[in-house]
Length: 339
Image 1 (cartoon, helix red, strand yellow):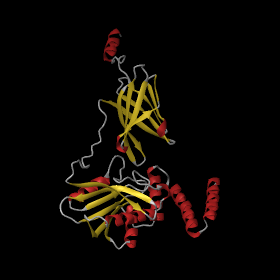
Image 2: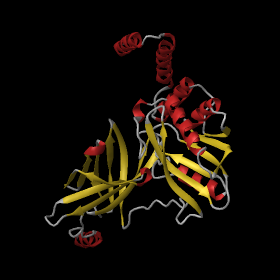
Image 3: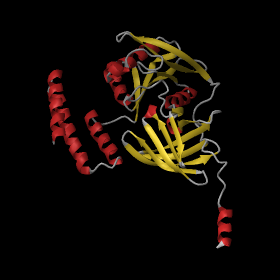
């Protein structure tokens, strides 16, 4: 028995000098996607643990972790700004932490591993300066709305006038590059087109970046008026051929581009990227069903939810008085909760 004890003791790793501080990386699986999570834990001169959170796939780094507790080989990290908590058990060799990520009422398994270096997100498609064309910061007014729109105009080098496209962003507040999760698709698209001899105007949405106005109160009609203002501005530029002004609309922009083309005889062509051939109502039904299935909602509940939404849309379409709509909607929700 003495010999066995000696062998076991020899195989056990001395962890007395190992600390929890370091870089820990894992993948958080949530409905519909997978996100890399990086915790950077350090110890200040007083011996207190501090930490930050990176979400590389979302383009977010250095989020403060307000609470860092390490007791009995259990690590607890609370990110109050995100309403999230990670709690996990540290392995004996201090190389793995298995635990759970809790956020917005959901609980998801998360295992993080100790790494020497945090993951780097490379974007080889993003153009690098100097560009072989002219890049100009511009601003112009939408006089009808009383706002100023700011953006970037890229012009092919060489003799003009050049054809031009105005990029129209998708739903939600977007900057001129349509930045999302650290991707900048409009920057990439503008670079490619300008290298091919086509000028490009890309613009911050109203109320975003350097553009003024209130995005939260804007409708698709308002965004269409912003595009019309952009067309009027392009017509003032001597580098632009006024007979070759086109629109490229992405997502909701694919709805707005045709609206603008109907109103303006100056639109020579439109290109729709991920636009829709359905009504907004039908799109919402389909999106809701897809999201619900990804979250594990039963088909019965999905059908029930659609029936309820159909009642809502029918009311909105048929009733003209806003106050009456509000009262009837409130009653519909109360009746639904009572069931």
